[in-house]
Length: 306
Image (cartoon, rainbow, N blue to C red; front, side, top):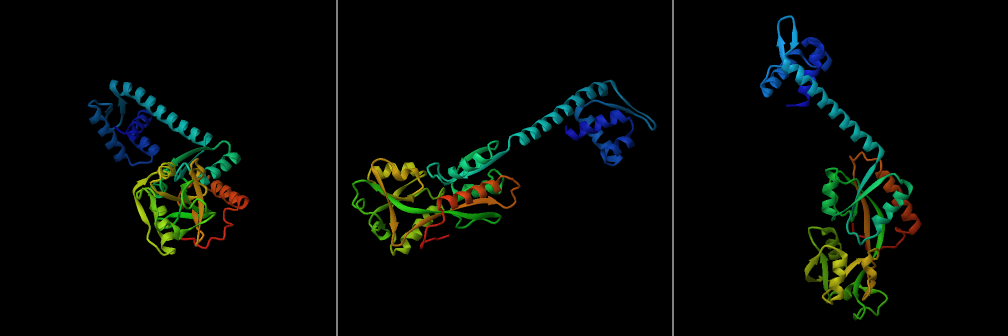
């Protein structure tokens, strides 16, 4: 049984004339007749008495009419309630790579400050998953390194984040103010889970290649910067991460910026060009304001892979 069949039946019951009812529903008379017949077959009862000149409701039709009207009224109220809820509580769905990185949270706090009625949902996902959710409308905006965005995804660079290495406080490199990238050649280097952060791992590979070596990789992987810091504390490996990560200042560890070449991780906002959300512009505006105020794009990055 379809809602349109109920609507057609109610209209016909009000008009008691196939021609007038079809005109009200903007369909041809034969289509209306077919839908009513299909409805009667599905119910297993006759709803109408038909003759060449008259249409009348059967007793079953009278009873069914009252119920059909209630169903259509409920559907109408449900639709209006949904529209009212959407109008009264605007929402923004924003992707974040890792809760430990502060770029997107700062932007969203700025958005919330200027749009207090906006409900913001944060979704933690790697860049590949964010791309999928942007494409199918589950996300309005995301963040990541825009190295290979899929068709339809727009990007804007908003932060060049100083990149460094996380080591134990008593590590041999901890006494340096800055660590040359080449000094990591003999260190077991931890990467992220490839399915979750391929663009991050690729960035580290390009960084090591620019310094003339292939990194020695730690056999395991992690899905978050906090889990990586635990391995660093256990002296199992070292981990490269941006300065914006909250894990860069954990007790027992030391974060040192990388140099030769100086490295900055490029954070870009991501959104689907076909997304009609009016709040994407608010996110972009907040990101640009913060970039100017905090100097996010002022770093003279010599190593800026895309």
